[in-house]
Length: 236
Ligand SMILES: *Cc1c(COP(=O)(O)O)cnc(C)c1O
Image 1 (cartoon, rainbow, N blue to C red):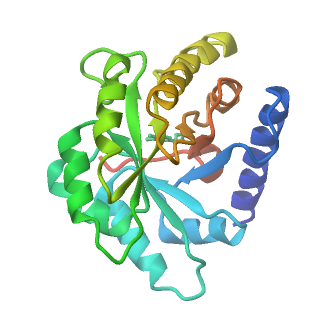
Image 2: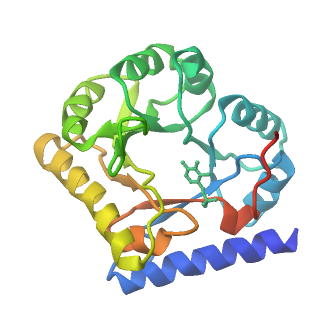
């Protein structure tokens, strides 16, 4: 398991260096460890190094890990982020098991999550996913429609609107990466100026390949899988 702690330290060092290089304080960027396709044992090993926030794409897989780890008294309390698409028939599972959802892109899903969030849990923390570069087939809300959705989501009492999330298509070169992430930053600033939701503080962008550029553009949360857990193999 040593390689996991080495990988985690390396990613933390990359985040620290990028934060300094962009004139931002240490600790201004959170790390979300993306554990999709990896088992509960790997999550536990990374948690043992102090990492607390974990991200999952596939609801069923995520819920299995969450349940398994929550039952282990020697595993610290973890914060679970849903970063994959959420269909209507999965909202209940998400509302009952996750702490965060990064991929909100429809009011209907927001309403279901709001209605299904169990009363004994704190409000679900949500980000609206913005399709910053893409065509019609990409998930996420068009930049021009983010504010209207944010206005409605902010009214839902069992959700707390925390910010925006984006997954730009890979582009070559640091400057090109910064340029696309900066568009998301601009939408974030626009929503903040127009609506100023009480806890609107999260810009979720940057992954293994582009986290430095995302931080340069203002990311407050990077979602890193490969650089921590290694390459993924998907079931056929
Ligand atoms: C898989 C995934 C990541 C992590 O990607 P890496 O390139 O492995 O760091 C981040 N965000 C989302 C939405 C993902 O699906």
